Length: 216
Image (tube, rainbow, N blue to C red; front, side):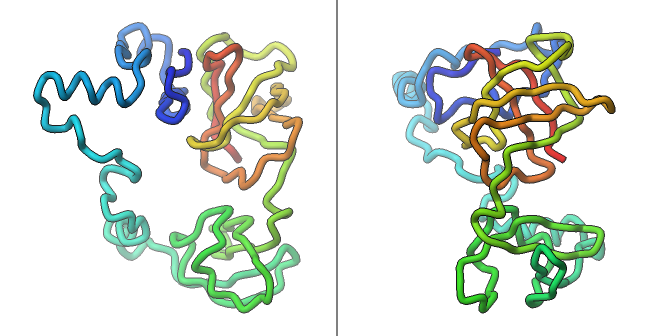
């Protein structure tokens, strides 16, 4: 699967998990068009969606309040308030519940630290949110599992790729290789910021999706 001509609207990151069986039955006719060209085609056919604003959020959370959606869906299973801690485990304050935070978040922490701090880790087991400096968010190595390869059967050695760690990430050059326990280690040439567990990391080579996995 190759990149769209519109990098800003490229969907290959989200579609990396498709199997070869699914791909051979899939048509993607809009890949050679920009969003404005598609709007023009829709306008020429009199379609009411031609000038519809771009969707910036998850379609089933139109108001952007993800925490409220999780509370409605999970009910009593929603994690309760807990502690903000630093990397050494020192308690810095209380948080509202881990569903309100993401790795890399700075706003809304309400911690009187005297300096800018960010969420660097979320630990569901202990219901803790770890905070630290901007430098604490940087990493040169990411481990992933739940792998799906599209352009190759598997990795038989180190492979140099460009990897995206989130949908709107521009990508960074890295080397990927299998570990003894079947995971993939991604070693980046330049550190990446806020690689969040549970997000997909997608590998590209020569403009095509090689595969991807889920960050641990």
